[in-house]
Amino acid sequence: MVSVHRLASILFMSAASFPAQATNHILYECVDANGAKQFTNIPANPKACKVLNVGPVGPSSAPAPAAPGAARAPAGKAPQVATPSHFPRVDRALQRERDNDRLRILENELGSEEKLLAQARKELSEQESVRLGTEKNYQRTLDRLEPFQKKVKLHEDNTANLKREISKVR
Image (tube, rainbow, N blue to C red; front, side, top):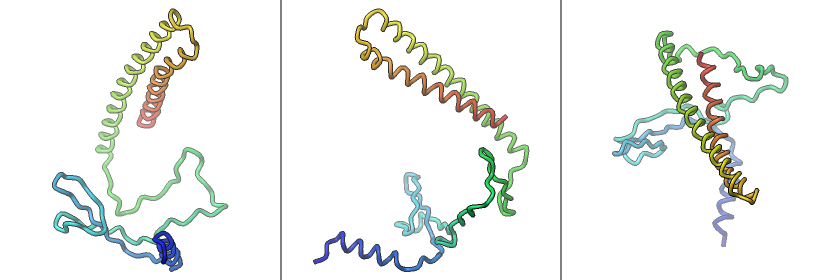
C-alpha cells in the first residue's frame, strides 16, 4: 500500500519532469455581498466576478537574468527605462497637486510623530529620575526602562524616515 506522502511526492516529481509551457491564465476578481474582493481561477458565483487576463505565465514570461558583465546602475539610482506608449499619463498640474497633497500628509505625520517623540522622551526622563531615588537592583532598573527606551527609539526612527520621505518630495 502506498502512503499519501509517497503518492504526493511521486505526483510532484512526475509533474516537475514535464517541460514548462507558457499559457494564458485567466483569473477572476469576485466581490462578495460585503464588498470583499477575492481572486480565483474558479469563480463560485460567475455573476459576481469579472475576468482578469494576466497574460502568459511560464518560463518565457519571466524576466531574463542580467548578464554577469552587464552594467549596473549606481547604488541608489534606478536605471532609466522608457515608459511604454500605452501607459497612462498624468498631466503635470495633476501630478504637482498629488505631490503637494503627499507633502502635506507627510508634514502632518511628521508633526504628530514629533509630538509623540517628545512625550516618549518625557516619560523616559521621568522613569530615569524614579530610578535614582528608589531602586537598588541595576538590572531591574534596566528592565523597567527598556520599554521606554524602545518607544523613544521607535519615534526617532519614524521621524527620521518621514524627514527622508519629505526630502524626496521637495
